[in-house]
Each structure stands twice: as C-alpha cells, then as structure tokens.
Image (cartoon, rainbow, N blue to C red; front, side, top):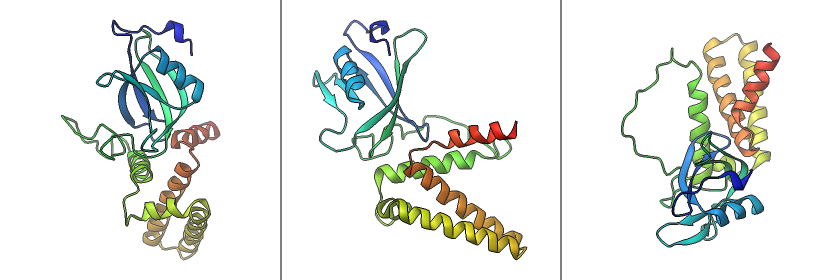
Length: 207
C-alpha cells in the first residue's frame, strides 16, 4: 500500500472499514491516522486511532481479539481504507462478531433471487460462532476440539452420503449432503479459506 497516497482529513484521520476475509461480513468501522496505518502495515495486525481517547490502540491488545490483516486497499478517492482480516474473536466491544447488528431497513432475498445464498448465510453464522464461541453450541464444540475432530466429522458425513446414495433414499441423501456441506464450511473456516475461493475454483473447472 502506498501510504503517501492516502488523503487524511483535517484531523489527520481516514475511515477504515474492517471486513472478515472469509465470510465477507463487515466487522467494524474505525479510524486510522498515519502512525496507526504504518503500524498496521508493519505488524500485520490492525491498529486504530481512538477519537474519544485521542490515542493509538491495537485491536485485541487487552481482549485478545486481534485481527490478522490479509490485505489492505484504498478507494478511488484515496480517502477510505478497506482492511480484510482474519479475526481472532469478536470485533465488537459488546462481544458480538460484528459491530453492525441493528437493521434499519432491508429486503429479504427469496430462494429464486439466489438459490445458494444459504451457503453464504451459513458461512457467516459459522464465523460468528467461531468469534463468539457461545456455550453449548455444536459449532463451538467443533472449534474447541480442533481440526482433527472437524476432519473426523467431514469423513463421517462423507461416508453417510455414500450410504444414503447406495440406499437410493433421496430424503436421507438430502439430509446427509446438508450435514456434509455444514462440516465442510466449518473446516474452511478453521483453515481460513474463504468459500468464494472454492467457488472460483469450481467456476474454472466448469469452464
């Protein structure tokens, strides 16, 4: 990133939109000055400038909920920054995965608008579970047990898909494939591999 190209405002600040590199959810909007931007580039983790405290702050310094930077870019006017991160815990001080939890308006998509929107929705839910780790949730259990447990479940569900297909039971097959998709998405999240990168490979193979 060419830091010298960034147009800071009169207070020496630039808005930084922080996005989960995996789920593509917007996590927060914060501000950077030149020093915090330089520290972010240097350390590979997000640093911001607190307008209320008037000081630099390292995201996760006290909470442990750091954000590892995947990429940084700026817009066509060079007056805002997009920071794609792999978050280690919630982004919001409330303990929520994202700071953007309140809806002003919106139109719910229909299945015909996007047949596979549920995969993106599920990917976001899994990302929230990893960040917030709610007690008693099955996804929390998988992340706590780690990659070996997740891989075991992927293998088990793949076997169940094979059995359902051999039994020629469409209803059973639907459920088993759905379970396999879910566990594969958990695995992708654990491996920090975004779903859209897998879809991009599918598109290449299709062509």
